[in-house]
Length: 261
Image 1: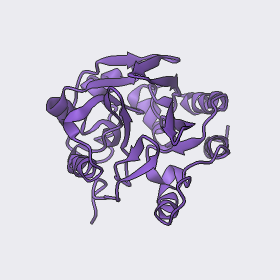
Image 2 (image 1 turned 120 degrees about the horizontal axis):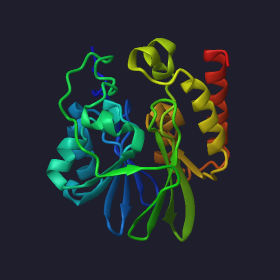
Image 3 (image 1 turned 180 degrees about the vertical axis):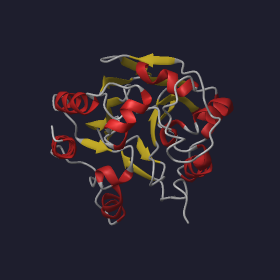
């Protein structure tokens, strides 16, 4: 039986200075900046070897990682962070309400639900608030709180450039409905209106212009199919200014139907 982290996928350049590090189940993206490497999510603790190997294959040195942003605090997104921080000294970022999950103070990492043992808790360096803009070299990362999947889920927006063409990237904080089910919210003492909060946060994101949408799971943005187009010669396989709002509408409709909102 394949484990959740046993899901390697070829690493590749998405566009410009943005790269995918190839874990199909739980994505890690790399942004090359003039102030070192930025990672978005780190994947499972057990899949760190994939992140490291795929960085080398793309020509990057893992020791150049300077910043790690997390879309939310589930172990398939922050599981390998502690090890990477120990290796690189990278600065870590998380939405403020998810801090206690990263430290282990709150039992919200989803390790129990995944039947996994986990000891990779860490203290985030920066607890992000809605609207924060983090400047890393010449790159500005806009942080938008989008609670629902977790209370601290955070979406990120930034520019990438290739051949003097600048495009806007959007990474959503998390769309899974499993952590918004009533039984889970009651068990964890979370607000019972999280599905409604989620819908509202998704509606808010329609205000953001996005040329390139990348998911924190590759299936969310059909990355496998786009990758096939990319290696077939379509350098703009991930460029679609209409996809962002289409994704948001689909997630909103799915949540409304599932929770009968």
